[in-house]
Image 1 (cartoon, one colour):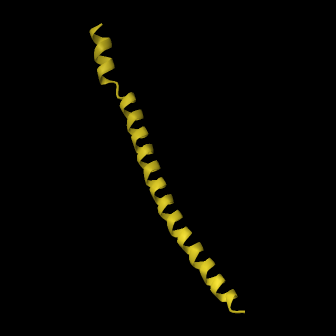
Image 2: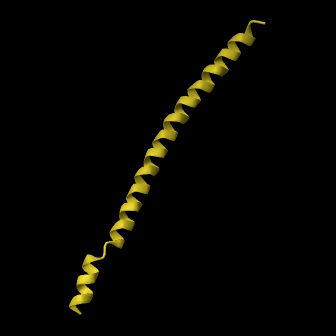
Image 3: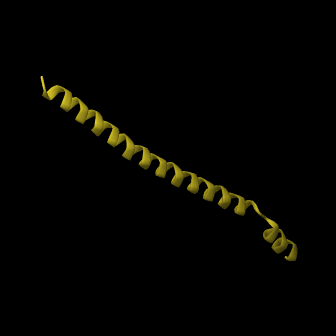
Length: 60
């Protein structure tokens, strides 16, 4: 019985799985943040292009 308890205490497979899960969660948060930043900048680019096209076509 004592050997079984000691083997359970020394087993680190569960800890490794948790570490990989935390790394995956951190990578997901970074990706989501980057996509939000890119989306905001891309919206501004499309707005600028639309305004430039509207200004160029309005004088004709």
